[in-house]
Image (tube, rainbow, N blue to C red; front, side, top):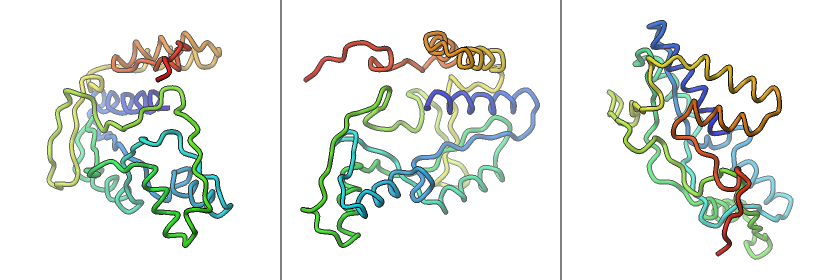
Length: 204
């Protein structure tokens, strides 16, 4: 999922560079209360009496509210130039386990009655999020809570369309290995995790 979103960012930034039109990208964290976000999922599990399912006890994520997400889109549209990438300053990452415990308390439920089940990380899933790549150029905009980010992988002069066609073709044919290779060629920072490659992961 992360790689496909990265491809979409590349496509928009490339289009901005090719056309000189103000196509811009906004990169979100987890939007609280949005469809499919972790909070409604946890709330539904609490209402059912549990268990609450968490992939890893140290899983951490950035969170933003729906109003913050809306403001980011509106402000990016107002200040953006062709090929810009904007990221909201979301402060510190939140441990999902702590969020779950807070939701249990706020629901007025006895924490002793809700079981927390650790399900294990999914292929390619990271314990902590990164808002931009190492080595990225990060600038403060007129709004101190909105950053303009420039990453080497996301260059406005790069025509992503041929690489995108390779990815689409591999996905349409169901060729997983070719798809991974196409993504790796299109996104130098992309590399499937050991789980995604099918490698044996040492157990601690």
